[in-house]
Image (cartoon, rainbow, N blue to C red):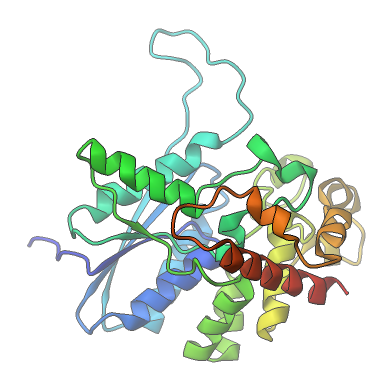
Length: 301
């Protein structure tokens, strides 16, 4: 029997935004529809989060079909000619690979690939020196997505991409989930996601899949639960009373940088450096950044 054409295709990374987008999309589909979720992982600790979220979505929306396409791709140790690769500690190609996998899956339906990411993170304001210039990813930046679609269209490839959360902060995304499934349900579902930047924690003796609670990803996540009025039941290493993970947590903490960023509202000059695409109002970008900074400030104060 041929597989039904999906009514929607969503990238599901295992993070809170993608999980929110996948669930909200599922809730909006007509009975009998097919939802296609596309996941990619290189760190094996992320795979269980993705599978668990798919299970939760199926349970929450039992009257649709959920197809999960999960791919594990890593670079081999050697090139095709047998020589070794040069050292490359970054994962810069991961995002483009993820997009390519999603677009390949979405092409069959002829509908946009949904990449749920809160607009504040997509604009990617420099929260600290670690996030400036080439040190920071712009996978869902509106200009990048716009120009990527233009390039793909010009070469005859499939390139329909849409970010349903482009105008929202992460706290507002969380609130949307709570409005649809209740605060208790949102707490359980969103707490089951993974937002920590440090998938290499196991190398420091920390359990795989742990969340430090003090990296950028964790702090924005925690601020979003607070802003949305939703209980966060995530186990963060920074909250461990035994102090077993104190060294790891201290090494990863960016709390001071976050305090500095959130101390006051972003200035217009920040937006002027963002290289927005045509049609994206700088005043809208500034207002969104101020809302995002406000969520961080309210949590950290």
